[in-house]
Amino acid sequence: MIKVNDNFCKLSQSYLFSEIARKVTAFQSEHPDAGVIRMGIGDVTRPICQAAVEALHRAADEQAVASTFHGYGPEQGYRFLSERIASADYAAFGIDVQPDEIFISDGAKSDTGNIGDILSADCRVAVTDPVYPVYVDTNVMAGRAGEFADGRWTRLEYLSCTAENDFVPELPKGRPDIIYLCYPNNPTGTVLTRAQLSRWVDYAIAHKALILFDAAYEAFVTRAEVPRSIYEIEGARRVAIEFRSFSKTAGFTGLRLGYTVIPRELTGVDSAGREVSLHDLWLRRQTTKFNGASYPVQRAAAAIYTPEGQKQIRETVDYYLRNAAMLRQGLAEAGLQTWGGIDSPYVWVRTPDGLGSWEFFDRMLHECHVVCTPGVGFGPSGEGYVRLTAFNTAEATAEAVERFKNWKIK
Image (cartoon, rainbow, N blue to C red; front, side, top):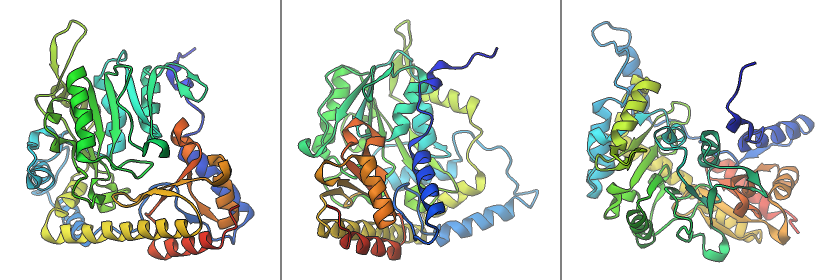
């Protein structure tokens, strides 16, 4: 008989969003005329900006001519894109990130899941709670999570984020080796100020911990006191890896593109205590397990850094932020308490009267015909909350708000 990786068998049979899709499909089959509005999964609705579309066409045409054809590209990405990222996303904000510290990939989800390949299975892990499920599930797969008991994995340290602590997690007590931070946060839509994030960098330096910083939603930051990159914080280059995505910034959820920054001075140690470059380990991993992102898609991404591209993606980000503001206002008028949606496309909603997250999900689906995401699916501290996204159209968002206003919730 073929032996399997037992760690995979520890996972629940259904990924959170697969279970949501199953419930919605069942509801629609029974109520085909319900007019369901999807605000659960964080997929986008706005088309890719014109500058990127034109670049895609040009790159596709290049592939039809022998002199401009591109086959296998560099696994870490083309220099024409990494140079633009280093200039526009970092140097323009006074941040030192070099092009060769940037690894282009097929998305932040892939990289946040795969980064564990270069880290020991013995590493202790801390996650904010609620948390993006990929961080937890990939550590289960790697054998770092322990056993699942009473809604938690025994080897993970959960850093609770709730209304009671203003969604600002306390520093770890268990001396983790790896700390996952996502800001602006998915799922709560909340943020850390520069001073609050500095405490985490200082902690990581003092305890020789590694911060895995998911900045997929940095383009939605509107307030000056909220950092867009962890590298704005002094010392972060010594303790942090940053992940970014083009999915929500530029609508690349279907094209698939993101990047990871690993500073050259960032190191770990092997089992013999010898210092090892994490940059070099990730390069070795990528050149073995990844063949590089598509050339036309990288050309499309480079085009968003032109003046026209920057203007166009800013219009899209502002569009979703207006949706978020609409959601916040409508939910408040319906008597519901919310967080997020200011520097983020996500709005986090407390369920009324102690309703469970899945119970509230079912009621919203059946009574409003609106799909949310149950907060408990993001971890034990998510119980009693749901997440709504601002990624639907303005028209659908306005219709959802009207339904909320007329909803007899209690």
